[in-house]
Length: 136
Image (cartoon, one colour):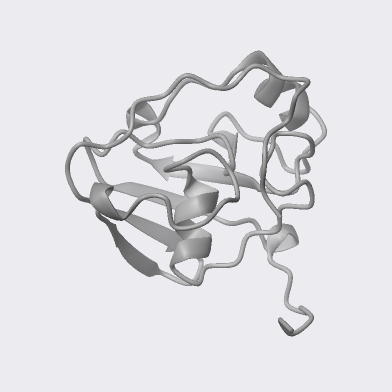
């Protein structure tokens, strides 16, 4: 999937300049993000939590393909939120539809860490799709 949403403005963000780590909970999977390796996939903004997760085998549902048109990639940034870009009005509008909203909730497709610190991201239980079709 992937692509862009012609109905929203692209988020403003700075890509990381140095390597950093993201821990995905509850599986406690730690991935090292190397700026030179971005992008890993076409889903979500370049360098986004969604794009990095998918590039490292961490599944996060994203019904719209990562174009900020749904709230299925809702995650909670437990640590390192200050190193991420600010949420756009479009992202906040979509988050209004997410279950279990918290002050640290973000859409994984729009959240881009700048690499200045380690980030810890919780994937809520309702966002972990345990049944997937095989790739053909």
